[in-house]
Length: 140
Image 1 (cartoon, rainbow, N blue to C red):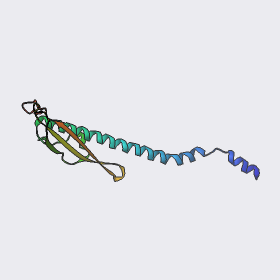
Image 2 (cartoon, helix red, strand yellow; image 1 turned 90 degrees about the vertical axis):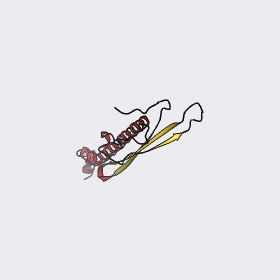
Image 3 (cartoon, rainbow, N blue to C red; image 1 turned 60 degrees about the horizontal axis):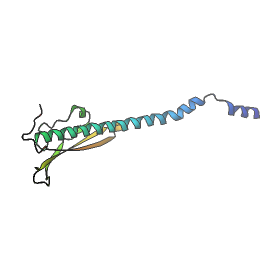
Image 4 (cartoon, helix red, strand yellow; image 1 turned 180 degrees about the vertical axis):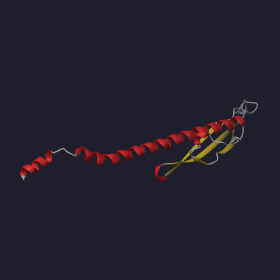
């Protein structure tokens, strides 16, 4: 009987299967969390890029929000609100320099994650008019 108990501690059969059964769910959960975090960061980057593009267009056209309020096709997979924009005069403080207008664009999107979880991503961008441009530039 004592010999059998001593042999039991040295037997490695089935150890790998047991370790795999314990670690596999943990590693899978870690992989899913990293994947979802990457999805949110990617969405934030796309939304920020779209806000900067719309602010630049608003500045070039000298309007509060571009007439074509279409979001880029990159954002089609997200549920986005219509872009909100404002155009506020910014005094230069120098009588020789004309005042400029700050065009601020805000975009809010919702990103769907695994398990029905939704994360809201918001981005803001500001672009200033060029005070020395005589006419607004239109997009080709």
